[in-house]
Amino acid sequence: MTEEKIRQKFQSLIEEGKQIRSKAGWNGDEYARTFPSSIDFQRFKTEVMNIVKSACGADSTHYGELKRLAESKEAATNSYYFKDFLGVLEAAQRDFDGGYLFDLEKRITGELFGDFVNLSKAAMREGHKDVAAVLACAALEDALKRYARGQGLVVDDQVMQAVVNALKGKGLVSGAQKSLLDAMPKVRDFAMHANWAKITAEDVSSVIGFVEQFLMSHF
Picture 1: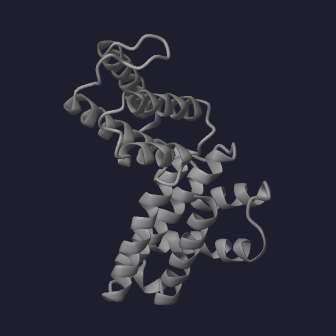
Picture 2 (picture 1 turned 30 degrees about the vertical axis):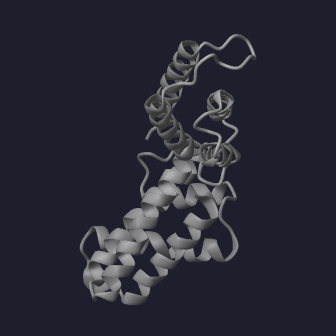
């Protein structure tokens, strides 16, 4: 889900929650005269937990509190649990909109290119060096560009060597990482131009290892 879709879902659920609360007859901080129907509450609860987990993460305080409320034996009969559920949702929305939780694009990028790395490893195990090279190099190039953009660099139309130089120029890569990264554009160019004879299994393994460490460090 994109950030905009998550924001829209947050808002629609909050509006729905307020409608359910109103139908239940809340008056200020007093108990509701009636509890929301089990069907309404179960559907609302499931959707809230899904969006908070997507936006905040399974390890977040927000999701943990929702899970605690949902698993409580009293949750099905105590009207305050619905009220608390809605309160956690509103808190999660405020933190998400304020940018206090995390960089959503980073998490999505890390998961996506983590899959690319796994596919590349699988290709190597099956003896498909060239396929592995394309997957690993594509993942690395896009990850480098996303990281550079996140650091305020304009690199969208740049070749990989230019992206690497921009990162180095801003001091964003250094030491052993810098030395390893210097060799990556050449391997990338060989892979993307089908110069398979110029790519060794060791080259591909080096790219895979670098991408893994880069994703762990920055995404």
